[in-house]
Length: 501
Ligand SMILES: Nc1ncnc2c1ncn2[C@@H]1O[C@H](COP(=O)(O)OP(=O)(O)OP(=O)(O)O)[C@@H](O)[C@H]1O
Ligand SMILES: [Mg+2]
Image 1: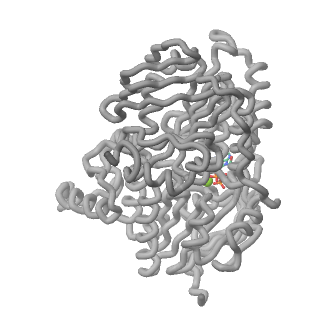
Image 2: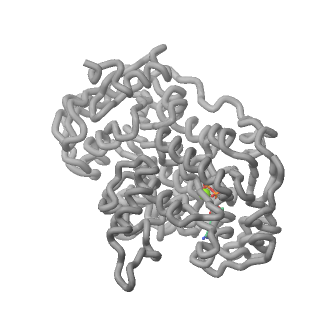
Image 3: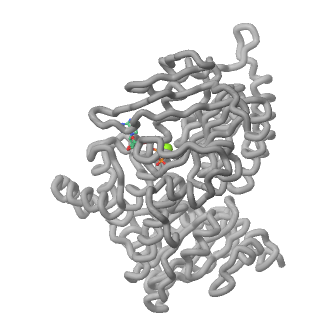
């Protein structure tokens, strides 16, 4: 690969927040027609440098060069005008507006002084269909799924004809099929000379699409290589600075075979029908299926946030759960896949977020600040939450550290049954290992865990048994040697099981 000149370059860039320096003199050069991957642990500074390159943040020291000339972006609009576009890690959409309004927000198409509604409709439809999504331009963003939101973010960025397109973990919330569509778009952009900067915790993806890889550790660049000079294992090692042994702990035998949760003929709205399954003490029960199979909706029905019908027993007793509080009282908690939308209050600190669920334990009227503080100390060490300071607003934590905090928050309620939806979305490989170990220990200590995951390796590596869903129905429950990719896919695609009939 010949080195084409850089379109956009960061030279010796540092950035501090208050007294804390989080980026230390980093360098990165983005070249025309190249996919440059930036990898590193949660909190390594990937999003920060991306925001600096795209005008959302200013460097504290160091400089940016655009086409070889020093440049200062005083806002993201200014960067956009020069063709530098960022697709944010956590969405940056206006929830109350429609898909189409979001795509054209701030640069509405006009005819004379009037909005050109028709052209915007046509253009939005064209972009969305190029991305093979079925989301309607008229849908309100608050009503669409997380993966559709990501596709809208991508459509919005594509509509802006970027010279430099910066994507911060675009595939974290996408299905494999959606990711494939995105990769085709990336190939197309690359061929047309766009410079692409890309982050992902999915190293197989990086190995596949990147022409060049830069590795950050603790805010500094520790490696910069051309594709092919580093394999996935080497990438992981460069990121975490240590050798990574087995990702999954050995499956422990179940504590006993006692059923703690029995669900029968369970319907949720008109999405899930006839779901029946048991969860045992000490068990990790995986839920596999394609996105849209109804796994999240089933769990939301169980904890009472969606209308549901059917029988639920906990420890052999019939229970009625009509809201999250009921569920929690019965020892059942659900950890959402949508950490920004529903899991955390981003404008508040870690302490406030942590104790939100367990308020009863910290005194309902007068919050016991000391106990809260102790809970935070414990959470930080137990879950290895890496925060620049203890009073950082949660919105300023790196994505992966938000997820760890959410996990800590869920556990503070001391549940017997934990449902975790996509536990490692956006989580670096070293932290993944810690989270798997944590889930493993939780089950080994006699709790019961349901794990919904789109990552096949995770489902297979963790679960004692695997429930597979398709189109709102449970098509199969696998155990032992049947827990393999081939079987899971067959049931998920409807080639096997009920849906095949
Ligand atoms: N506005 C802010 N105020 C204070 N600290 C911040 C702010 N933004 C980011 N940080 C801190 O800077 C560090 C780098 O964060 P950054 O979001 O760049 O990490 P990342 O590499 O993108 O991680 P992840 O993989 O989890 O997304 C973290 O310690 C983060 O908490
Ligand atoms: Mg990030």
